[in-house]
Image (cartoon, rainbow, N blue to C red):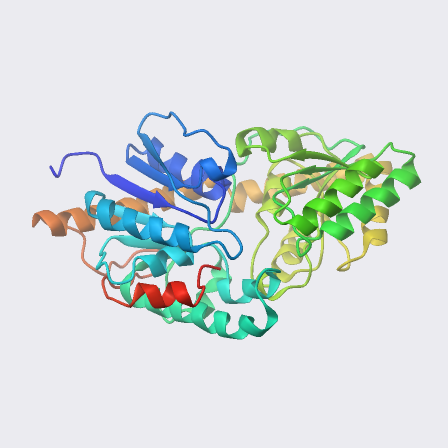
Length: 412
């Protein structure tokens, strides 16, 4: 490949929705804007999503890794890596199972974007038997150690750094912050994102019921996103039939974010789970970016952000009554909710704007891609370890039996 040819990136997920905001609309969008050619492999058909027709973007359909049905996606991802990774300057993967699928292939251009604490997340997965959770958590930590020895990592949270021996680049979950926003209104409390019981589905629906009764339907809860499992879907269907909530279903990010404009407040009612204690819910930043007060449970990062910015109310875990009360108070106090909306918007515009952070992400990925291309062609390239404001990077290749990873069900 000519050193002057456009850089090529292979982006893969088998777990996330093809329209995932971080993957599709922030990272891939930034890479395309920077002139890279991107191959995007994701479970399009499984989610009923048409293959995108976007200049510079080549879509590839993969099976969906869901619950215990993960083997087909694992094998398809491994075949794709074996056939196409070498034709790309950088391979950006978003799931631990793809890291496992790459084992033994000797890839020197793979970068894992670490979205969550996989081991801690196992506790919240209803399809994982209780007796298997400890062994799967240990296996997840083993994948992390394996990845750190052989690949570059990008972390979605600064708090994730404690799990790794080396420092790694952090690309936080942020949004493009509009320059101006509508003031919050008085009638729509919104929840944005996929919904599970661990993400507060029961509290959300119960708060919707209390609001409907207390305000005679003047204040409603709107849910923008799909249920992630059958139990949540059944609960949500019941709430909609009862008139407790309005459910818009899955809406692509480009259309979902404008639906926040003019709402009363944004809701983030996650339960107190290990995986959530070290993560910043992206929805909190999205609400702030669109000028909404935030009502959140007291998870450390979310509560600290809301209190520091002065942009919302922290309510106890699993407390629908406190949630409904906070929303009623905001609906009756226009001055207070507008002040919170302004404060949150100003804070994220200064600290969490993808319009700024996206450039840092592209710079890091293109540096890795040019380094690899330079090594492949024998031309000068960036050194293996580069001193830069973003943290230092890790090594390259190695091998581990991939079938063992698959047998242990490490696609979590």
